[in-house]
Length: 296
Image (cartoon, rainbow, N blue to C red):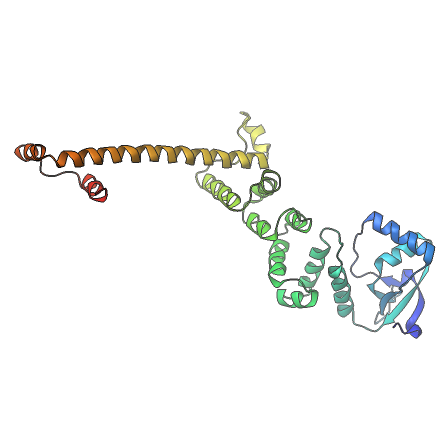
């Protein structure tokens, strides 16, 4: 139950929003209309700033959407519950409230985690305070430290798993977007993604460019970035190469089997063995001898 004595009408302009967040236009529109029709059901929560400043007297704990809805309706004051908490605690409560929301905008969680990391909270502390898995927080921390906003957004939108984002971030920057496209659009999942990274790494070690070779103009080719389609073609080409090698290996294996079987039959003939001895041909290459022994 809310203690009515702590609810006051305060100026919206006196409130400092420590952790601003974006929101869906539709959800915000519904909130404005609901408040216009039935009024504010729940006051916002603020904390008194110490010391107070000329611009702001309060830090917002929760209720940014309600404040913006009131402003949209032309209101200058808003009902608020005033508590006494240090700014660090207010920020943490605000972040945790945002993290607890089922519906949030991309990067909401990530921005909150980054703020907490900037405040020197480690992964274990953030996990305990937010309810997020520590392993998830650790991996998000890797992407934040690498400045990978694009991969972070893809993770938050559910386009790629966090583990895949961590895998992609190990590749050079010019390959990362192409790998992400290959994962999202071309089904380059699981071991396939790992294999194509190994192919690209081998190409780099050989000094072979990962740029598309469709254009013969060197200047034009250098400007064309690697795409998901290029990644798929590189992978398919490698698969075809391995299939060709496999077929060749199988053919050679059949030939070796035929030769060893023929030699075994010949060596079972006494006249043939006698002829070899008469010609002083009593030895054979060591590799061939090993093959004959293995096939017995």
